[in-house]
Length: 635
Image 1 (cartoon, rainbow, N blue to C red):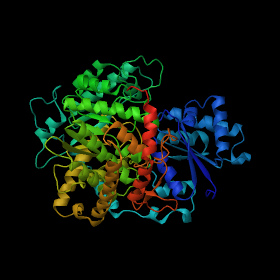
Image 2 (image 1 turned 180 degrees about the vertical axis):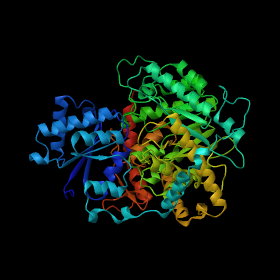
Image 3 (image 1 turned 90 degrees about the vertical axis):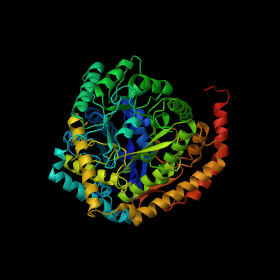
Image 4 (image 1 turned 60 degrees about the vertical axis):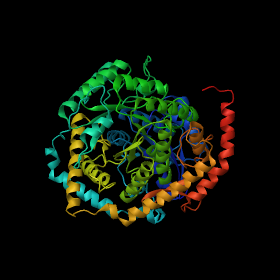
């Protein structure tokens, strides 16, 4: 049944689940079609954590009435049992309060977005009363399931990219032939410190890069069972590391540590929920992991409090391959840590100064975190450059530039190449004898289909896309983060991880062979990509010039806070701290011609000069607020 013209959608999720990308993407699709969409605030997210209580059900119903909601969208991408219970309690609350349209109430529909198993269970239990989304739907499929009339869908949203179709055809051929199953582990060169606590990413790259180089492959690994003890879960992870080491396909393992490992390491966790991930809680467990994983390099998430202290733990007990921080993120604003944004920046810069003393590489997890929350492509690239310049200023010598492609999922491949090349161009301009840049691209977090055959095809396709970032350089990328093809359906086991590595290496080698034979386009000369790259470089250049001219000491915690809070980096879908960051959320963004743009009230793209001039006007106010905040505060 088509949705009504005056439909008001509410998208809600529990605060226990940090995944917001799918919610933000669906919300923007509906807004682009002219519908009003409201996202639940931190209070509503907390209510959903404990929606089984009647008092919280009453608060939810009151909020829905107050905001005149007509469609409730729920999201949960963790445990499927929790998802089913949450949906059940919400549906019970709506029925008990006569909120459904069939009862004469305002709610015309309820939808749920989550993992395939949760969607299946919800459909079976609630007899198709709940519209479900697995995350693999195209924009057109999503709007079609909602019943959005064809005439309300913007024309540019119906366009596609021929390049993307070419990549998928290439990927399909790789998977159909199944030759990737014969791919053997890459024989990496040996060197004195390989696999020891003195090994480093730079040593491995320097020892293994050849003219016909195969990228070092990193994967995220994080088994967890809610029915096992903490110690049993850590033991299982050690077994996985040993298996991955013995089979030899993977070069770098990333520990998918739990939220409690990041926020409360070394404490007594009691009965607090782990939330998924490896529950590492002792320094000696990191030492065990390093030993089990050898000769693979190992890295892990940063802490979300006591951040410099945790970086030292990772250094001393894990010999972490590199350190990664999110700067503006993983704090109160996104529900991932206890600090406010400014305090988080202070702690991150302290940590970066410590990292500089270790000579280990530093990776900023910033561009894709902005993209997760609706930021435009200019902000995506800008955040990478700002992080790189800060890193160089504090003395870091090696910078790992992570580029997450397919983010958001409806980004065209030509725009992905432009974003990657623009970021790489700007960051490489900072290179000298004391500052080296290492490119590390990866597929998008929500890119893959729950259909595993289709997901394998997508992995092969995105591997080719990755190789087109620098198609004339066989040593690029030096490091590649492999996102396992099962991401949308289930946790990747060592077998799935190894198969994903086989697909990735096979696809890259075959794509390079076809390029040499002239069988695939030379994307280094693609005029569309060149034009898009130049547009991004000019827009980011405008923003950098404005920042460096008007923000006092821009490459500092105070400077980064001012840049963000004044509105130089429009990010409309912040879930918390909205009052503090009113200028950050002031601008709308929307998908346009394969990318994401800041737009005005009429939906037309806004110039970088206009965004910058608005932000410049807000600088004095932000600086005053920061001065007031820090009055008498010793950090």
